[in-house]
Length: 559
Image (cartoon, rainbow, N blue to C red; front, side, top):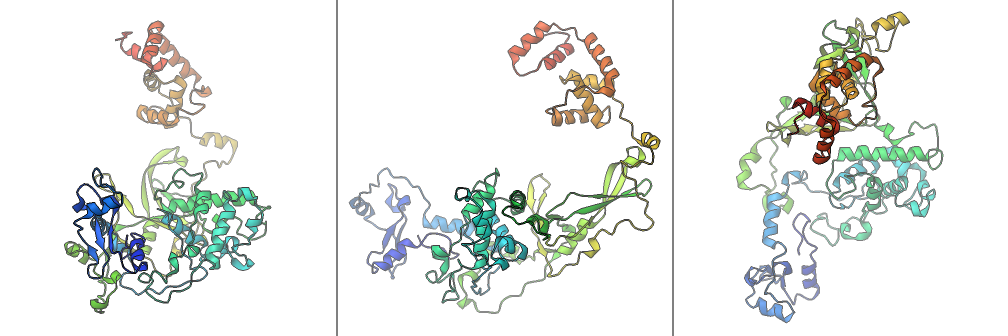
């Protein structure tokens, strides 16, 4: 079938065949639409005086001469009209950010496109960002760089056995990086500036200019349950997975395939790694403590919709619509005109950063210097260090009133330059009283006195949990973890940790409590063990302890 105005659709094969054969046979029929009702078949005429859908009266006879019996045939594909309606209904017109602009085609090193493998746009966007030439350090390692590497010669190509090339992460990454930064796969510029309208002169249809990262995708995603599929995935998650795979490959190849130098770029992920510091203030005595986070590679920011404001009205282009291209035509129906006229909301990126670094309250924060007593706290985030390149992820989804995630429709204004110095951690300030570290002690005696005592385990709570079928030491361990007497919290802890290897191991510090509870349980237990084993075998879904607990509650009645 024909191509659509946006480049999607068919391959134009039928029309090309009609023109190549001298425009002799203009009639075509879409085979998947042929049924016993021949009038419903999708027929088209390429004749100049028609050039549109037509009805062929003797279609059944013509098909019979070609061995196609219409009786019993069923429709298997959508007609052209149905596909056009579906395209107009589902096409994301708002995604065309270049609408109304005359695009000039460019080509050369660092200007190489990637073919979509089917829901692989998240891969292409990450790869273009990392290896497309915008990050010189990665271009130096995996691309052409200053080492004069080529798509045929790279250090990672010569240090791997041929049988291991397909699954080798470094080799596949270098192959793709060299292809993106060399320009060898970039096609010549077309004669016409309208690339979409002049498909024959466009190099995008020539297979030798197409770059499909299939081997790279398989090498990176083979060990991941989601990325190895053909489904659409999250670009931020893929970026983190890709950097982890590169770290593993680079660590295993250090000193072998990857030279050990004094260059600070030992691992690719260090270009993006940073740490944050939380300044936490106690509301009881205004003392402060600083805690450093684990190294991160991406800053996740919430979009403060309370700071959103309408964007300025966009200027209406003065060009005449009579000579406009298909991309410049009106792309919204009259039914959506009212919604279209509404100005979208805009939030500056600086506001997102300020919201991330603003003070937030924490309820029931346990303070070690106050014997683990809970008090309200105030926390502020700051950068402990700045990375060379900072990846920012905007949280565009929030939980709606119906507890269903919904996308936040807002534009984020990103300036060309951004000053983050105000968000840098400056350490302890003058007049602040710091809370000592939990493992800091002045002497052995003071250490023993300052060490918080273990919570007292409530024997009644242990018995209650044991009546539910859990082991005694597991119940005691759960109560110890949650403070000693909260049965509900202990149950949640048990559900999370009942598979731990030491879940039912004895607790030396709670021997007396265990003996008391064991004696109480032995006095309480007066059920027939024969009945217990019989119910366990017949029911098949309960443990011995659970059945025994149930019989204890029912005075030994098996019913």
